[in-house]
Length: 182
Image 1 (tube, rainbow, N blue to C red):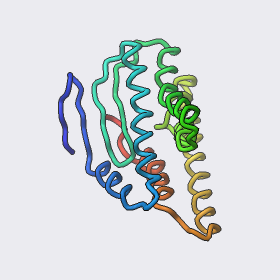
Image 2 (cartoon, rainbow, N blue to C red):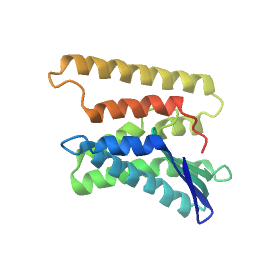
Image 3 (tube, one colour):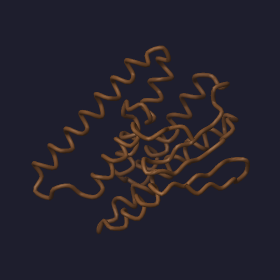
Image 4 (cartoon, rainbow, N blue to C red):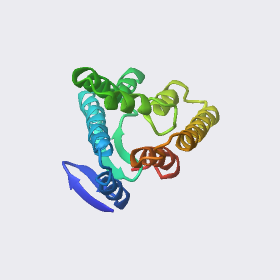
C-alpha cells in the first residue's frame, strides 16, 4: 500500500484499488470507469460535508472494496453526522438530476442499502446504536439477497455477467470482508 501524507491526512492507495481501476478499462462501453468517477464524486460530497461541519479528516483509503474516509466525527451531533452520511448520496442525486444520468441514481441507491459499511448501514448504526446484532443481521440478509439476485440474473440473461456487475458484487462482498479501519 502506498501512503502519502497530505495536509495532515494520510492518503493510502492499495493494490486492490489499482487493480479494480485497471480492470475498468477492459470494459468496452466504459460503464465501470464512469461508475468509478462518480463514486469518487460521491466521496467528495462526504468530504465537503465533513469540512462544513468541522470534522478533521485523518485518512482517505483507496482499496479494492472502494474508498474509505476516516474523520473525527464523534463530537458532532447526530444531525451533523447524518448529513455527512447522506452527503455522498445527495451529491449523486444532484448529478442524476442535472445530467439526467441513471448511473448516479444507481450509485446513490446502492450506497443507501443497509449494508454495514455503506451509507445506509452507517445511518442505521447512527439511528440504532445499541442494536449491533440486528444491524449485522440486516446487513448479512441484504448481502445474501444481492448475491442470489446477481446469480439469478446472470443465469437468466442471455448476455451473462458483465465486468461492471462482477465488480459491483465484489465491492459489496469486499465491504464486509475487508478491514474497514483506515
